[in-house]
Length: 296
Length: 271
Image 1 (cartoon, rainbow over the protein chains, first blue to last red):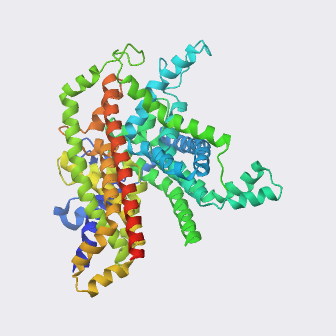
Image 2: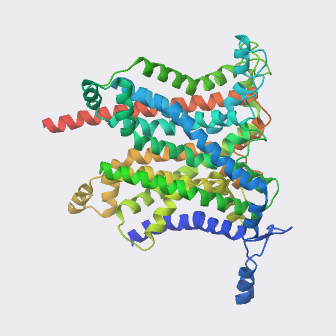
């Protein structure tokens, strides 16, 4: 009895507030837009019995999904989200690896502090961390003031409201997700392997490439997925830093819903976004499982 | 043998400068007396004063705290239950679906979670307000809690609880007296995680909030869309200060607790 309650309570909560809403999105993505409340048709009417249910299902179609393929905006937004997520992940790896590597080589008594310094930004508001870059990157912002003050340039750089600002924002906010898994992989590494390599005549750079990088591979892969997956559906960063020219699917979905009030198309955009995300999520799960088997 | 090379020192310095400079600049300029945020015109705390006079911000902050406290508490209870189910309950019908529903929200884009919950609330005719934000936040943060707690439960030695049962504890007593104290650190960090996720959330709250229930992130969002403002700088500074104090205190407490535990273990070995 107690076991039943233990299982049933969280189960019922998740069914009602996670699975059912998701089925509703799926259903609305197959509906048509209508000027009414709610603004779509058909709605399920149980009072008409079986004919009502039959009418309901026959009115559903894939029109919204066909619409997504005919309008340039959507597929461009999907492609551009994937492209931005891919480049941003590579940049985050490029910035994060040396930091994780430095942390792993730091003396033991520094590490808890360094660790806390990496985690601290993660606890502070995401919105504020993105916002802090608006003042830095704007035309009359601190970065331009600094560069103009040094006399390095005569014209201010335009960074805010360009893809560059979006990359900076993503690298900045997702950096801890990249550093932590790489650091934990590097920390587990047996450092005597490097000594052995040096004794056998390997240069330090070569030893790094042949030993350190392969041994931190699982950390690199985990970090990349932890950045790549949430970045695809990112909304806040492209909206605040990207300006109107940066196209990302999370932003399109938001606008479709709040500005155009086209719920069926917003539903279809969401369903396709999830289908795209399944691939990296499955690959990520497989990587995690492999790692667990290696450890276990 | 590990040694810190010059390259390591440089990358650590640059890396942490990159992580912290934006926030240091933000904090510094919150004390700028000029309305023009990018021009320094002398030290002043007037934006903090104006912030405390701003009813709209104070109301939003109050809503946010209420939502965060209630949703993280419910999420901790449900998430801990879900963790017990995942680790302890063995096989039961629908187990795969259950673990799928625990892990899916962790990777679900916020826009989709928000959209789907909004459509549900409209579908069942629930008026949007504080209550609906609490429902939404509880749902996604309970999944984070259950991941944190279940990783602790996996390393837990079940024979301890069996021993308590053998010695005449009821199963609830065994849970309360043996299991709960051992998993308590994970439950507390789960609660903290749920609390900050709720404080921080803009996207899901925007979908599920009604006109009378603006949270602080929604309020901040609508003012920074128009650009940088000194009042938001002041607000950000306060929020960063609260988090910094909280995280540093928490890490000192856990450090002291682990030191004490080590001392206890040593004493136990000697005795």
